[in-house]
Length: 318
Length: 318
Image (cartoon, rainbow over all chains, first blue to last red; front, side, top):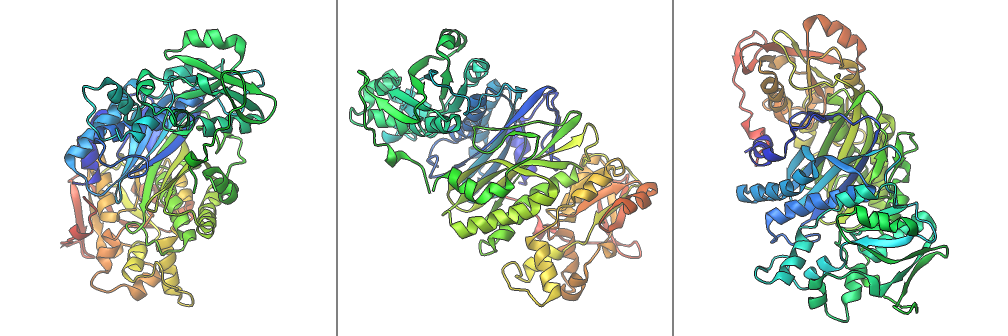
């Protein structure tokens, strides 16, 4: 079967009916109508089998996560998802795998209001690259660079769930009938991009980033781009019930601070806007520290005393 | 070295100074200002080592070709390149390889006026996915679907050079001091996207496509999308001097018709606009046949007699 036949068979439900798609899959390019008065937000992410996901994970989850990680970047800009293209490299085009993969993509694309407008299928070691485009009213995008001394540092949802699921080997395990394990597994395999939160934080947050590499590394990007520092209360990092039940006491904090794969938002908000932000969000927003004039990231305990965290082992690098 | 340090070191020269890039590499997304009154043209392409290129090819050529194949899609829409993102999967981040790869990208990006605005680097089997965005005045994009009976079927440049280079194993050979082999090797490793031609054919051509998979397959897309057929004179397919010198007599036509990797444009133009089109182009435009009401692609010889071409072997499929 050729590439077009595969796309028509499996990805039909992802194709656009939207007026802003002038020409979708099937020409040299897609032709798209950008909304007037808006900027484009553009992001690209690759997931490689064996590195970013276990190839034994269900294809539906692989499809889900591939798109979710890109939409999480759009969420961190406060952008509304519009269009995406899929570059799919596969060893073999197995019908049932493709159908399930497309199902997973659709489960994320449909509620987010984004449409597949193009792609490329190639033969090779399994990997997925999705490039997503969103739009945001001109000048309103949330950046990493606007944090100010005194801002509350906040995170959406809970931290460490995905990393704990990875530690426990839950990605490919049947976790039915164990609500804690099922919850953690879903947090790893099927993250929910915080699109509504990002959208509603526009005009309130001074800076935002999504927590894909873990709080310690990602917050550092905000601090560097904003030329500020932060003091973070380790005891305040929000934990899910499942995490509280199952996290090993000695590594819980490291998983939360540097385990990665959280896809929550970390935002810096002026103290006086915090209550308003909380009212507007559909997800809990936890204050975990504050931005300081003094540069660097400092971890403190419940009494404000300094805490030495060695998180180097979790740093992704070459 | 982390991802950002690598990007800063090697890809700096590709980063934008342009006013339409509000925020480039280094945030969750790039923020881009689309020009008013224009549509976006969007395309994504993956090149996998061992399938689309020999990993022994010089890194500069790999960088060149990775971007050129995407810009060729923009050329086929008559779009002006604006921005691109690079998803690079590498086994190891070798300094000299990255520097040369970036050099090759730049050699294509700079004259085309396009800027690198984001990317993702991951560890894994070598592959490159580039997503390119261009813009085209509203309603002026060249599509595959507008060909009309009577239109002249034309191609830019010459056909079969890259396929012949592949047959002769020139991709990784030193071809210096042999002008024919050097020419063919460059046609395979360093194709020139026909951006000016695509741009100048807007308003003249009824339909266009780029010849990445070879004339036989790609022209068929125009015929299907336009609900027409075509009669093509096999003897008229344009041959470079190097091709004439080195192509084996028995397989020359197959290489030209279905060898692929040409990155020339195939366009359908009303007969009465042909002279005007030729005047406007910076590259030879050869009339190779005409669009017919009767569906299907028919090959004919110099006297107009039917010609049976078996090109199935060249068809890319799963």
